[in-house]
Amino acid sequence: MQWDLTGDAAVIGPPQRATIDLGTGTLALPLSSAELEVPHYLNAHYWWAYIHPTAVQLFERQWLINLILWGNYARLRDAVMAEMGDPLPGRTLQVACAYGDLTTRLSARVGDGGLLDIVDVLPIQLSNLRKKLPRNAPVRLLAMDSSNLNLPDASYDRALVFFLLHEQPSQYRERTLSELCRVVKPGGKIIVVDYDLPRWWHPLRYIWRPLLAKLEPFALDLWRDEIAKWLPCGSIRIRKQPFFGGLYQKVVITRRA
Image (cartoon, rainbow, N blue to C red; front, side, top):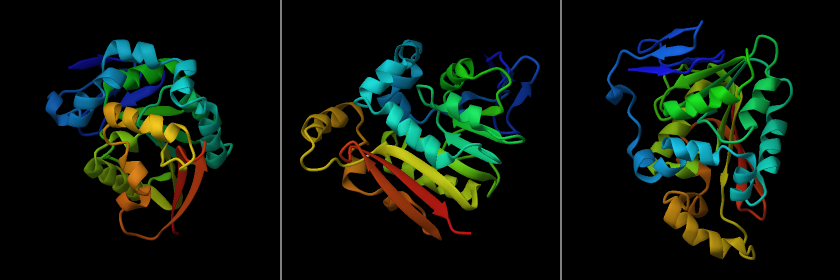
């Protein structure tokens, strides 16, 4: 199997599983597809949003992503940028590609000697993101499952999860957060942006609920419980900020030094 992802941003997988020609950006995986298996929940519930090539062409539109988020994309993106800071020293991890310009803006903030790693289990999403990144961006695209990161312990200064957790079944969500807590350094931050339970007076509370239940069957988990429910026990601090009447949330998880 070979994925032609020609470009300057390196695309790599787990070191023992993949090799890359940095001159061409071609990723060669001498392994069966089962070794980097697409999770069942993605194939079953999100083929229409992330896996089908037509879906990628459709959703990779800034105005459409903003519309889906009820006009809040820029506000949520900028909240991430403010939390991250400028410049971004050291190593930064983003778990799962995201439609829109969030990652390209983050890549522009990477400080001298810094690095931005983006993890995704879908080759088509990594390929799409590579096309958006500027030439010679200090970025690596990593073909990995968020619930099983082949990355060293305490190797990142900060990590970002942007609208991923609501798509995952509970057991995947718990493993993803556990892996993030493992790979972020003591004193480092994990920034989560996702859905939340809107205030009782919010008009979209009663419109959005049946739509989420139909299109995103695990999203209502975040209406019923706080994200802390799926965090591993450990020495952490949690800070939460609501957006748009509570329909969205930014949660900052800090590992105690």
